[in-house]
Length: 235
Image (cartoon, rainbow, N blue to C red):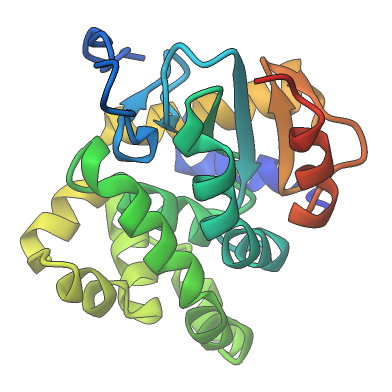
């Protein structure tokens, strides 16, 4: 999804802590399942896998990008079982937000801490077609109203319109917990910081985009293109 100047629309919304535990030595008889390890990078992204992996893969994504939803659907099982589980590749999700709806979803994906992230991330993306239809069919007046009020008020209105409250309730969150996550300024700053790094430093021009050891992978924006590149990496 090309975003051109869409990032500038986020200016109205305002403007890492490495959470990994020491890597325990592996038993000679027990192979670590690295898909169960979730840490946070210094950029603020969520990392699944060995935090000391030789190859560190990152996806820069948008929750309103249908190509990102397709990537999640196609890559979820094979990426985990074929690459992350072995420990030689880690996978990090970083935000490249395109609009306030995207920002709202990104805030909620982080709700509940690092161990909840990938479940929230998947739930939001797998239901994307449904909640995006709500906005695509809304009148101009309704869309205008979503941009009125303080930042927390706007995010709450977007969450209500998309029924993110219902989605998160199914995952065990109360309305108060959702509102608290939407008001988390530190989380918002991390999300916008990753977006600024993606567009300003890495010069990424679409979502999803991928980096390997923080270097952009040219012309790769899908699982079909990414998989061969990962297969070529040494273990």
